[in-house]
Length: 194
Image (cartoon, rainbow, N blue to C red):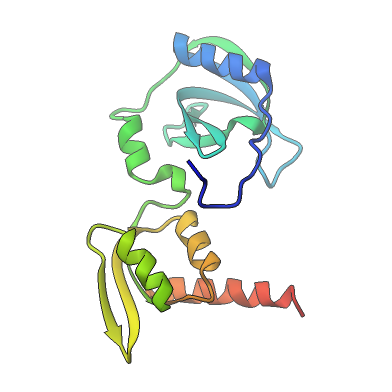
């Protein structure tokens, strides 16, 4: 398979971390980790209740809850600097289902809300979206001989990345808040080239 995006190199995962996470999942055990988010390179110690291990592209994520909280979060495995098994049973949130969690869009990094997207596109992007639609309910019309695509899609970071990557071929018409967000980001990007 040829990747449709820029080929990147997978991040390095510490072997002892991977082994501890796998063991915790197999034995239904909690783990203590030192995790550094992208915005906090120093790291933070936290007790996790591992629920699943998911691969998204080149990055492996641990799906877990933190300490005594029930909200499910994701942790990039390569950002865990150390992990130690704790002899305590994992507390699984009521009705948690990994398939439903993924289906809800959690790993696309967004709130999972559906939005009614309306975009004006170039003719070549229209052709691509005819062949590979944004959603099953996508419609294509025309306004002043310019293609208009309407689709109900999940609002995610990945959607915004895609819109930005197609900036010369797409204009967000609706929702207005997304249009404004994309406009601001494009203005910031343009400043980089002045």
